[in-house]
Image (cartoon, rainbow, N blue to C red):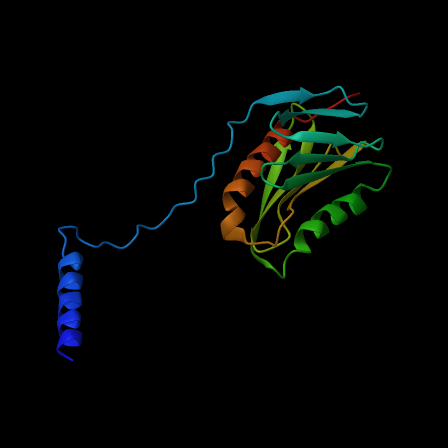
Length: 189
């Protein structure tokens, strides 16, 4: 018994001595998400056989279809902008309704849907940009038209479960590219 007590006493002394140090124990600092996206360098996308041209971020990969619909992929973010072209054939009203309806279909999951009118008289482009806040499937959409011949819609989607707080930096980056697309859009006559 005396040996057991002696061993226990020595063990307690070793633990007390080893736990004593001059360093103060601090909690870990909060981590910050470090997303580093490349600065946007834009190139003209005019070599496609479509009735329009625009500038696109060279970081993105553009896949065009024969009907002038396109996928603009951001592989590093797992994001895609789906761009659809439709000719105006006395159906402008229906195209406008469809363009607005697409954005407001996300109303159930969205916290806020903000719409921003877009007018560029120099390039004869008019439209609306929608910013959708919340856990909606798409967080940015727009439509642009010349009101006579051409109509384009675009929607941003991520290949992940919507979690707005997590994807917000990527949404802001791609949304900036979508605004640049709208600003540089020109119709080929």
